[in-house]
Image 1 (cartoon, rainbow, N blue to C red):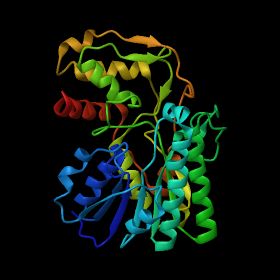
Image 2: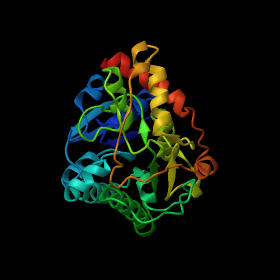
Image 3: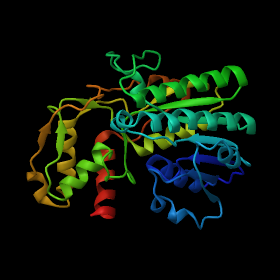
Image 4: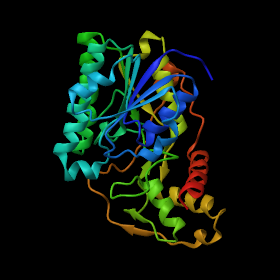
Length: 326
């Protein structure tokens, strides 16, 4: 554990990625302030941290500027994870998605500028690539957004760029590609595909794949994302800041292959899972067919070296779900 006097504000710190970041940086000796309104995050994700003297929880909403300014007290770095995720949710309710993801983001960015923080690292999204068909996805080549959610995440990048150029705020955007791992919520209508499939298989229910199962994603294990946040926060390479990076493993897995891995790893705990059948449904509106990240820019400028492949990450995630949610 490194001893440091630095304090990090993690917005959305009770969510899946945010709570993993809180744990990670507390273990490294940082002081951590978590800001969350618990609209999609969970108290149980951070309950075990409350007694840690280096941890502070602020219950509040990034849509309220006063709360954002209050949270900035004594902060060195901001890791902004708070957002309303999910393409389908944004199609159903574009107004709330915009309020949180754009207005809330701007509040945090402006509060960071006013507080003079060292650097603002934020969760961007692979959805920004939109209808661009080029593979692998390279940071400088994007298409037109395919959902309200994608629009909001692209607007975040535009605001960050303007704040860097106009006010001198150091920013780094991390375009997350299908992050998965411990603490990812398997329940609710907007549950991510991996925890949802895991829960269904554990209950011997047939998972429903949208389409023929040949759509592919660059599934990225949570520990690779923790590494990227740390590198983005601490880099002293001037070329590496005020830009965006793909945050991924750099490999493509179809949904059919994903189910194959999950059945294989889960059947080590329960052999009957190997025989669970899969159901195919219609393709989902706003979904892109294929996603694969180039991670060359992050490797070159941040010395990023992801440690977990899809299969290694799934093995860890499946074990966690089995032990915690069975």
